[in-house]
Length: 269
Image 1 (cartoon, one colour):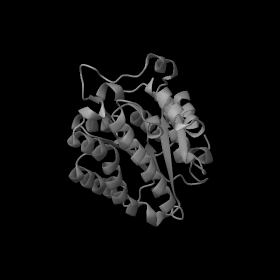
Image 2: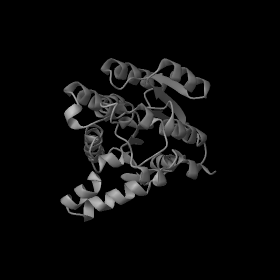
Image 3: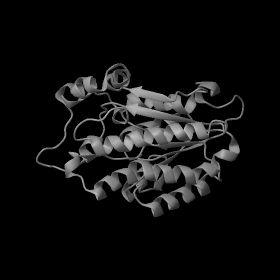
Image 4: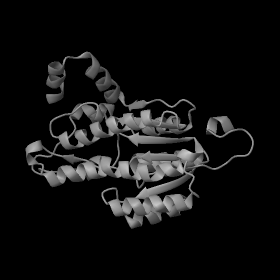
């Protein structure tokens, strides 16, 4: 692999640091391994102390981070700035979780926690780390969104709302950083085989919200997302959005082409 393919200039290789949140498994862990193989220093943020220890054993720099806690986010950001000498190249806002259930079963507290982790924590962390990126006139900020940031379905209203918010927030951040040298991208996965589904907080355990059986045909492994993450961090011209899986591509097009009522009929089914 050449220096150009790795995203580094020819000559002396300077190691660049990337912070990845939600790094204990799935998309975060697979991306950490890939980006580390390209020569980046990976700061692997996890919510549980035992996972932080596991990240250190795996050759990453483990960071303790609970996105739902403002104090934890502040402490993690300070640690990242200290570890990188106030020079961070990349931030992959990948951490998050889902609350599933009919809107009538969701309390305000559950909605607030959904947004706290999936959008408020990402906002706080990014704003605290931007001073370690802006002076250097380069960098990448990448967000894990979802096909649910493009469309909403019954039972996934809270999660979809948080991802819709993340999409709008990312679009605004991209435009505000237009002349900064920092590129902003969204990863929009469809069904991916990770522990996300097992970790979903179901408001009705007697009637859990589940993917339709046909979704299994289009489900891919986390390596499908890694390919997009690599491009977002390495390419001189990263894309604004990276749909992943046929479902994400199809929904992106259907949302543009179909009348709202027709799309509702498909999504209700």
